Length: 123
Image 1 (cartoon, one colour):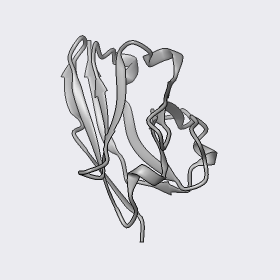
Image 2: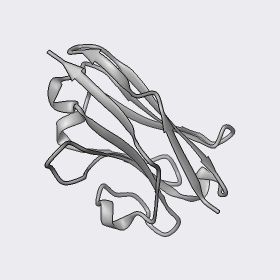
Image 3: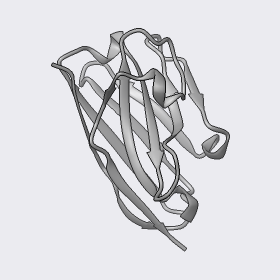
């Protein structure tokens, strides 16, 4: 059974940093495409960053040069380093995994999801 558990969310001031973690169980992260997504109140879920099996990455334009996605295969954990945070980054952040997808930011392409961790950025 595939399980994803996010952690690391919290409240920070604009310009601050947070690192989100997503601990995976039931499958090796090295064999799955994984991604980070976010959803703000009243808005659709959107892709933030994706990482393929081989480590290739892709980012939404809104977070390029500020966020970095990575994974530790030995720890079976996905990370999202978020720097220079802005109030508009405030959202619930989710990690997701898929065994078929190569890489992508479309939420509909991912099969497995975590429960989310809240990130709040104040101005």
